[in-house]
Length: 357
Image (cartoon, rainbow, N blue to C red; front, side, top):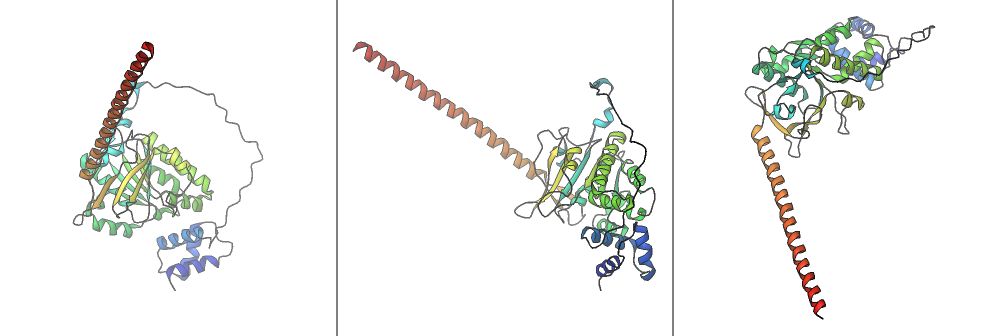
């Protein structure tokens, strides 16, 4: 029997289920002392998604006192450019071609929040963590961290063996805190500790919020979006949250995720199987939307390398095509003017002939 079958069978036999992950794990561990908690938690989350197990929901009584109205007065604001916090409008540079698409200021902006998504195996986590490595290399005064909510320490160690530079990236494994009563606070504080931070992954945190807090999916999504925006606005952190990808070719979750955050970055395969990144939305990106930056993984170092030459060639081709288009339009315009002039001359000659007659 596989681990999955064993855990699924155990959960199905629970009947109405249990309120918390802690209770389920406690019961399971009695008969399976050699299992690790992270594996159990992962399969339990999958069982919930597959509809094989429904955790018991806590029922709370409706308060007898009426809800207080939170009325506010509309306030129009102007921006005092002389007194803004300039530290929230600087760029975190990688000194790679990625900076050219990250923002109109040539680098990923501080105090912003992004979703990075793409099909499985495209390299979402690899891209996000390598950006952190590049940022620290360019400016050692900057800080970067990794909040891993689905990988345990052994999973991440495997990635670090391929790219030893990532081993130095401060990482917190949230699977270690699933039983903590202050799980949400730990997550929030972790996202606000750095100049640049990766959250892996958005959807897993929603599942953990639902499991630990008893929230609905909609409530969990809203709370997580608020946390990401809070980290950006109050701590000035740049958050790169990894999100899962559907078979339909888009991201998991509602469009609120896309609209409420600064931007969305896709990791894709082209028709030849080559990988690239592109922003499909970026409030700080100017005209850099849907511009592809190809990348490869260095076989010796394991580090992601962005292909600047290919990007520049594409840009030159676009520029050349635009110039050719303008030239053709100008030539067409001159040709049209020439035809009109000849037609005018013929009309005037015909008029003179008629007058003589």
